[in-house]
Image (tube, rainbow, N blue to C red; front, side, top):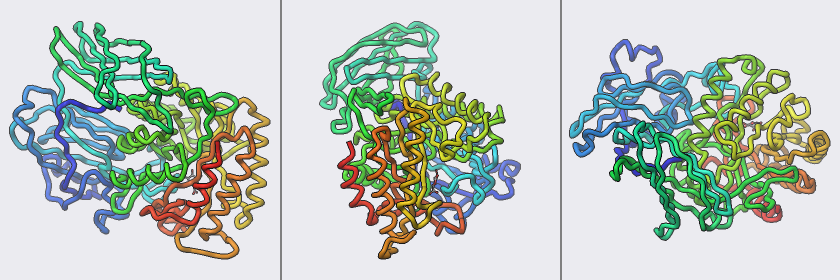
Length: 560
Ligand code: GCB
């Protein structure tokens, strides 16, 4: 992520909001302005008013704000860190563009800015879920996944200003031995200079260099730095300036960490040392805020993750917010960054238009986050129903697409079809989601454990050169429900389930990662087998620990 040092106007706050179930807003001219209720941005709309709770469809947002005169003459960009699912934007009544997808950042060039005056932004958001959406579904309840389908502007929005020539892309590659590669792209056709400066946490410059460019330039070097690791997540600031005849036209700032992550047949390696991935699948979900985790909750989560001896998580089932991943960089937590391709069915694998859309969202995700030290692997999909040959082709295309944009990181997808999965073995590691002892063998944890260990032994026999990570395993633990002996849904059952999986799976040398499903309870669409929430969290939705937490802390401490 590029951290801006460009002039900005933050647009978080109380906006106006109006649901538009009949989709009449555009023909009624609401893009010029409308009367609406107050709503807070960033956050989902659903829980901010009981009337909007189950609402899926079109809704309008409006915000009036002042732009200082000192920015006049600059080019304005409206940046949305995440809004969706379909977004269209008007600025002072003029259409400036739109975007598809809820979880990736997009920027729109703004014309017609009134400097030193008031301006109005109007946003039409449509969260209607269709079989060809990413992720796919049919409305609020018939989703092809089990997390609640919130709507709205759920991540920060701001206006950013640049001069005519600016830096348009930055790709930083590092290794723990101090290797540094910086690729800088600009929109500037005329010859200019790119100045790089690497600054440590004390503010001292540890490296600097100036190179000439005409739009695209790559610099490779070796610098004397401390590596980024889980125990010492040392970050540097990389300042990148665009200079024309010595005059500064743009500057962006990136936080970088020097680390090496590899997948070998024997497992995962961070900075040359073998590492067991222990952690969770998570969700961005919180009471009232919806699909938006407030800063204090994020900070608490990361302290808990460290305290529970976790070293990693997967951004199930969509790329998380910039803030969320900033903290992973800061705290030293490894991230498997997952694309929002969850719930794919046979129809998707045969659909070339869907493949193109999937590649587009993956490009946005990778470009947005590929400079982060915490992001060590990508997952292109969660539980595709890959039991047909076309799935192998489809997922293979996605994996090579990722590698064409970022050749430095391993790629996986997570499988629930296991040995029936036609694509298994395509990724750099094998990721399995397993619920034996919950969805099958319900109530009989030992029978579940016997099945999962048999499965990993068979998978290893078939793919001996691929390490295995169990990306999901877990059981519901209904908060406050206790039973002796442990029975399904009780906190005791959840604890025992997790304990027995960890004890038995960690005995297999080729199982090199265990991610519990889930870190915290999260809201689901209405289902007969869910009580508003999926309660497989080891913390409640408001972050109170369940019985399992203490056991996990001990068990994770023992995993090396
Ligand atoms: C899965 C899915 C996850 C669900 C989980 C469950 O396999 O990947 O999104 O929430 O199972 O609890 O059923």
